Image (cartoon, rainbow, N blue to C red):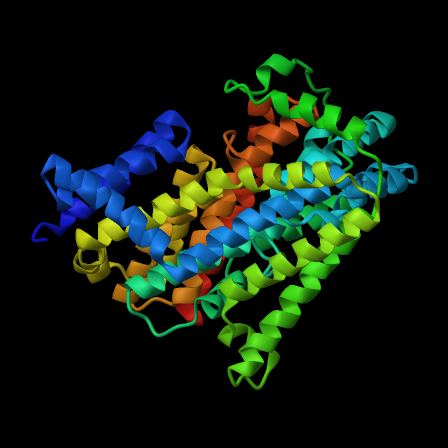
Length: 475
């Protein structure tokens, strides 16, 4: 189209509605409709164009692989959730915790068994952590922050075996196709992990806080008014968790078996697929492998073997099936989000979004300022919408288009996009982890979010310096 500035309208609608409604999905629907109706101004043709974008998205083979992976992964987590694995492990180790440092150490110790999904981790270890807080009189905000840092900051840095990997790789791949770049999406994703400076810095801060407790810090008692936790009715989390956990029998191996099987299969199949394509080294194999298919294959095999394992272990068949579908259905919001983001990107491209970015920001923004600009803008928007996935979906097209037009490093810019989403998810009072942690540990939501924000701003400041330094002096 002649007026490429119109390509901004769908994104402006999505951002403004997300901030207003505190939910990104309605904004994505309206933004997609707006983009389609700008492309085709006739009402009937505009509706046809909207559906065409969605159908085109769902017709893409790689997109279907990602959707299949997310649903099967959710089903696997649902099966592990009802099996009682982490409950048994946490209860066993919890009897040995006597100090605040030991409690914080426990939070990190449970990470290898609960890293797959943020909500899964927090909901499973939260009640155990809460009982230990009462036992040793530990400061809730400090402990809660450690739970969230060890969840949000770690999961975005893992290259395999998480629902986040599938989503993140798919965003990179979609924009590589759109910009016609001759690059491996998984290779770019692997490199971007090194440049997710906010997550890395917060991880270091979390580890330091575990072993260092300033003597001058005064513990403040926290109000226990449950009604203050969430204006949107999310109080159900805490009651539902405790009710379900009380009915689950502790079975550590029901978690250990599928977790390590999924990890092992993911790494082996990535190596095998890359080697079959001619790779000589492990890193080359991971870069050359068809990561989306490998992830889907790994979770499928793990799901089948875990199902057989649970049956042998005398888990009721109807219970396994119910929680498989329940877990998969819980991923439908994420799947819907991804489909709408893909479709919105198609409409924006038809409106000339890449050309507009290249002729405006791309024409005067220095290359070394591109990653830090994306990080700052993305962090601000991420804080207001509280969704890492939503932030990534909105800023990945902008970030990669800017990187191409300014000549900035694509992996560094992609890392900045992922870092901005991590900031929003960790600090926003609208973030799922913040709401759930505050609810489980009986903390006022807004006060807890402010506590995390004070510390996270330090991490963001360090990340800004690192983006400027790396872009200016090394890339």
